[in-house]
Length: 262
Image 1 (cartoon, rainbow, N blue to C red):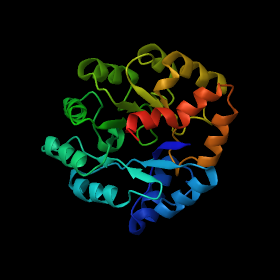
Image 2: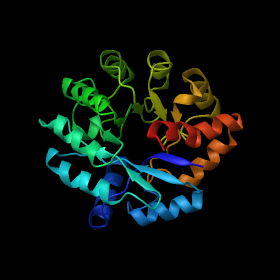
Image 3: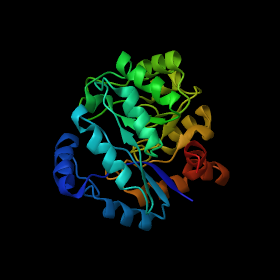
Image 4: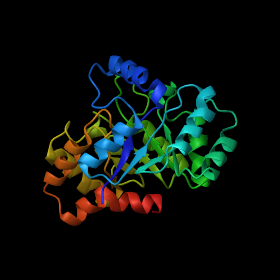
C-alpha cells in the first residue's frame, strides 16, 4: 500500500487560475493542472492507494467554503484535511467543526497566511487542534513566495514543539525545505513527523537516509506535493533507496495508517 500524505487539488472552476498563479510564484511548471480527476489518474499510474489533500486558507473568509470542499471530495482514493487561518477569532469552533465533519486534520502555511509559525495565534490553533485530536500539517522551511523571509524556521518550530507539545504535528519537506543542517540540529529526534514532499529529487539519497535514520523511520511520511512533483517519479525514487523493505513499507503507508487511524 502507498499513501501520499501531501497533495493539492482545487475546485475545477478555479484550478487552472490557481495553478497558473502559483507557477508564476514558483517560476516553473506544475505536473498537473490542479483538478481532482488528474490527481486520481496520477495515483493510478503511480499505484498510490490514498492521497491526502491539503488545502490552504489564504483569507479567513474562505474558511467555510474550503472546508465544505474538503468534505465533498472525500472518497475514490482521496481524503482531504481541513483548512484554518491564524486570524480566525473563532478558531476553537472552526476546529471543532472540522473534527465533527469527519476530517482528520488541518493544513497551515505560514508563508501564504502571512504569519510566523511561532506566533501566538498559531500556537493556540495547534494546541486546540491537539485537544481535538486532529493532525496538523505545516509548511516548513524556505518557500518560493518569501525565500528571504522564512516564516517557519527550525528554530521557530522547535519553540512551538517545546511550548505546545503537539502529538500529531507533521512538518513538510523533511522538517525544513533547504534548511537540513538546522533540522538535524534542532528538530531531529523530537516528537514530530516529517514528510518527504518535494524533497526526494532535491537531496541526495545519503542526505535523506541519514536524516531518516537519525529522526527515526517511524516518524517519516511519504509525500510528493503533487502537482509540484510527479507521484510516480517519487514512488520510484523511494523504492530505489537502500533502506530495508520494512522501513520503506512504514514510510510508504504504515506510519500514515497509524497516524490516520485507518
